[in-house]
Image (tube, rainbow, N blue to C red; front, side):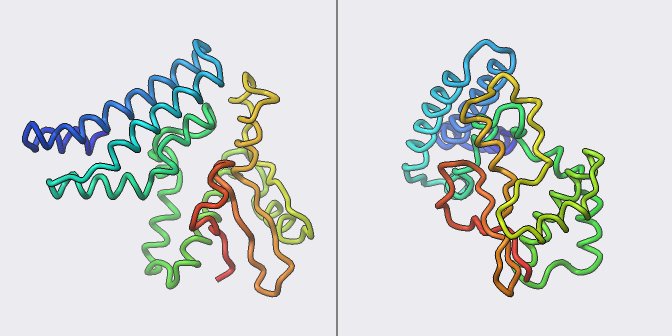
Length: 217
């Protein structure tokens, strides 16, 4: 939203319409989240309204824009489109922004910078998911090493015991629980490469490209 606001301040009135429209949709998403958490709307109502927001955003992204700044913003939003409203499909579990996660992982990011970064894309993705698991386990006072050992030794798919279900108590026995639980499912492979398979972010996104986010590379 900050990017949209800054763009609108510098753009002509005509060019400012696109970032302002995006900013309005994101603000509506935050308002929906708050209404659900305050128990003013049901989970079904939340998801129905979220679908309407997605349709509006898709219509904005279908257009062609003359301003280079608008084209860059549209390209970025198309790339992030599957994840923009994840916080509405998993209310109370997923934050609307990654600010908190970035602060929590800052130390490990600094360490990565000191050693010069990752040499391969697979290595970078492996480090990203390991960092998330390690920090989540630490915040929950759990033995991260033992969690990973149990996961890698398991011949069958395992659900890591680090999914905080408490924020979703109002949505018990609903698809929200299923979606939340699937977020940290890490399945192990019996191949020599020792690769862990997909971690679906949402049920609809299981076929989206780039879901293989853990590799032994």
